[in-house]
Each structure stands twice: as structure tokens, then as C-alpha cells.
Length: 151
Image (cartoon, rainbow, N blue to C red; front, top):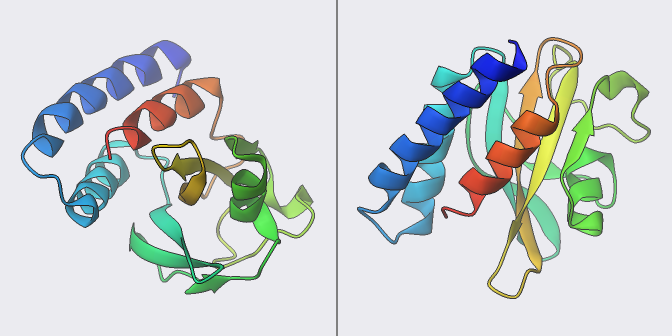
């Protein structure tokens, strides 16, 4: 998808989510709604989910797409890299990312966006995989970071 089209689509999704998410303060409901909207409106999203820190582990909370890894191996993979750096990580080719955790061999590229508490400390990640290489860029990073803040 070209950047201009992607920007417009994310803008519409963001505005839609802002309105929908204002109906509830329940974090789980917000996460589930975000995933449903993103997964079904962004055709290159193959797997879309949230992993949260629970007892020192990154554990899947809710997702859309094929079966997920329940717990991600500590300090390994894209999601842990996002947690440790507290920054969005974009990976053009997951097979070239050292320590990549392959929950589904069809995944080719990935973006992981940290969830943060009110003090800016990471509490989890929004993780999105694509079955295509080079699917994610700074447009995805910008808008997914904005969307995560709606939680």
C-alpha cells in the first residue's frame, strides 16, 4: 500500500477508534476492539495481537489471526526488543532478525509497539506480523503508536 493511501486509512481508523473506545474504560475491551479493527481493515496484517508483561514473562493477551505463542522466550525476539528499548521496532525480514521467535512460519515482517503505563514504563507490546516482506514503515509506526495511546 502506498504511503498516502496508508496515511488516509490510518487516519480514518484512528478517528473511528477514538469514538468507539470512549464508550468504555475497560482496557481489555479497548485492546480487543483495536485488534479487530486493525486486523480487518489493514489487509497486510497477518497476525495482530497484544503481549503483556505478566510475572516477568511476555504473555499473549488477545489477538486476531492464526494461533499465537502463549509465552515469548525471555529476552528474545522482536517483542522483547521493543520492551527492552521501549521503542517501536520495525523488522523488514524476520528471518534476518537475530533471535526471532517464529510462532508461525508464514510471518515475513513485523512491527512491535510498546504499551506504556502512565509513567512511560513498558507493560507490553502491540505486535503485528505480515506474510509479506517489508510491510511496515514509519507511517505504521506513527499511527500504531497513536492508536496504542488510546488504551
